[in-house]
Amino acid sequence: MPEYSSVYSSSESSTTENSFEIASDGSGNYKLDNLIIAPIETEWHHLAISYDGNTFKAFINGQEVLAEELAYSFKFDLFRIGTNRNDDKGFEG
Image 1 (cartoon, helix red, strand yellow):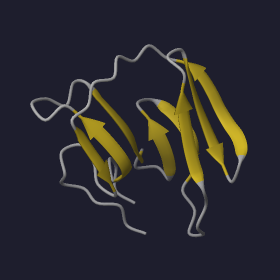
Image 2 (cartoon, one colour; image 1 turned 120 degrees about the horizontal axis):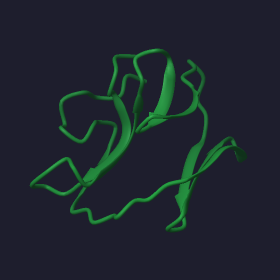
Image 3 (spheres, one colour; image 1 turned 45 degrees about the vertical axis):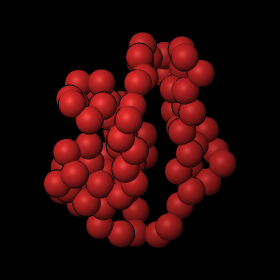
């Protein structure tokens, strides 16, 4: 899967600076910014994420695979499933 092909992305319509994106890292992994979430596989999996204002958590098939403290300030007016925040790299799956 090409780098930045996204499963989910949100951003302000005027900029990509304030954004949140689950994407491919180009090396076979899902990532959030520089955090590796899990390997990309050819089987379907349930990927869930949560953020409580302090800690980002990722779950694959109900199992927690990542918990990291992150400082995010969310304000989105665009919500996309299956493409990146620039709407130019779709999810292949």
